[in-house]
Image 1 (spheres, rainbow, N blue to C red):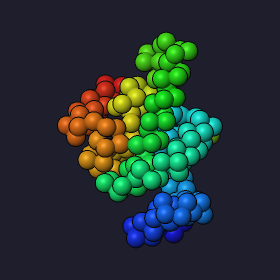
Image 2 (image 1 turned 180 degrees about the horizontal axis):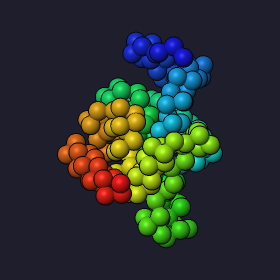
Image 3 (image 1 turned 90 degrees about the vertical axis):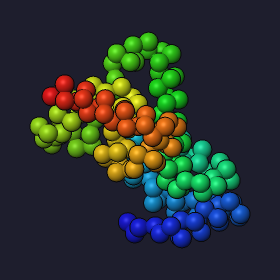
Length: 176
């Protein structure tokens, strides 16, 4: 897929805001969907759930596009919406399953039939993490997002992100 430049992205967003251009938003969806879906898949651990959360995230983004002011990147804004969708889902699940914190959401990887031992180890380590630590790890190590952006997505201070990453690394060392 051809990379979307900042200028092209800004033009598409402007077309969405000014003219309610659904084709422009469709191009944004086409560009970001694989990345957002991968993030949600690693976070939620279920293909169908990741698809549903991604779809809900894009719908919310489309409906709220006029509230995007460019204070952060569009990707950061979109990831924040997706993270909120995931948190809403986990809260709903928590209402029906009181032991959500004791049993972290499983993380299934796309290529489960051919998982190497290393992938299984990573899966076990990720499963051992609470949701906030897992989110920080996925955004930092898998999505390659800077700490400042992770803080915006998770709506926490940068120091909190660093602390979450530190605790996650320690916890993963203990699992290993």
